[in-house]
Image 1: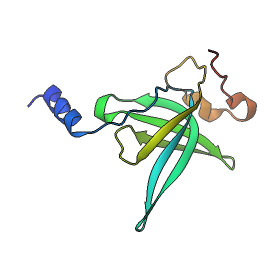
Image 2: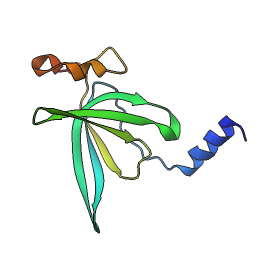
Image 3: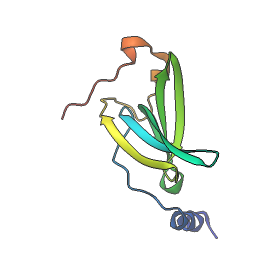
Image 4: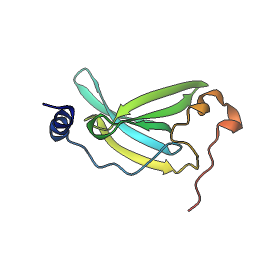
Length: 117
């Protein structure tokens, strides 16, 4: 079994939900299911997409937000069954696919221009 055959096999096992199209620089809200004991609730994580990485079943995206002056980054796999839905709040105008330079910026410099239609 070669690498390509293995990847195709994994693709058939993983069920993917349909999410809206987004890229680095966009502000999104991820509705994430959290299990606490025997209860289940949905938590919203809103932030800027820093990158999309991988392809197919192993694709992930990194979202960054600043809470009480502390930067919080979270990596979500696209194939995660815990992602309920993704909302695109704002389309950002950035020139790169990975915007890690945002980590070093604070205040007004950390703002991303909104893409004009």
